[in-house]
Length: 256
Image (cartoon, rainbow, N blue to C red; front, side, top):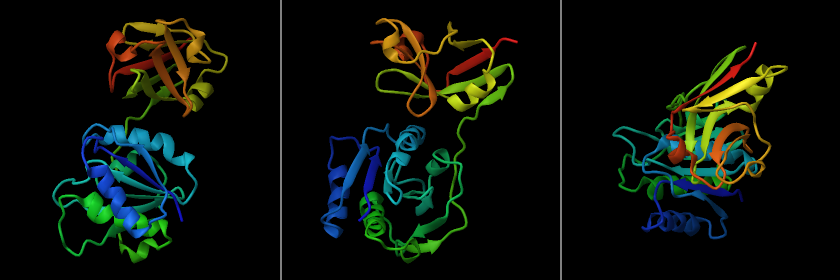
């Protein structure tokens, strides 16, 4: 039986997380359910997409990812199940999946709801479909194929031989600033060049190997474990101290 991961904006103070898990376990009593996070900001699709994109590939192929972020959605939104990069995603069709991968889906369906409505679709529909997929049911047996689903577009880099222009895409729990500047692009453009990384009123001409290579209270700039440029303050909150937040610009200027 495949693993089911669970990502939501439900928080931990109500019964919602337990109710969805109970529905899954009532169908598959031995089901393994791995919580990714339930502390996504309410209806914050960008936050949820960043968390999911950062971790879903670490799970085995065939894993089912139940994504309950803004799950009630808007009037007319469908509930979908999608096979993408060898993983299965069960969610509301609200555009989130377009932010986690640029690859094309290999299968996609609209989940059958028998024309009924629910105030708790994650329990009523998504949980049961996730359990069915994990148990080996084919997508085609759980709904009708669809030609496309909504795809939000994330911030894209602007890069040339003299500049990489990016943005902060996530302020994490520690106040670190995670950008969309990836190591592969940086490595290609920085060969045999010096550079200056500018963020707010600060700048750095060095990328550190690790956080602890700077003293407490000092700024560090690293490429993190998912290959994205990250700016922080050792034992401090970079977002608060530098005055930078989601969507703040970060520039890498290369010297000619």
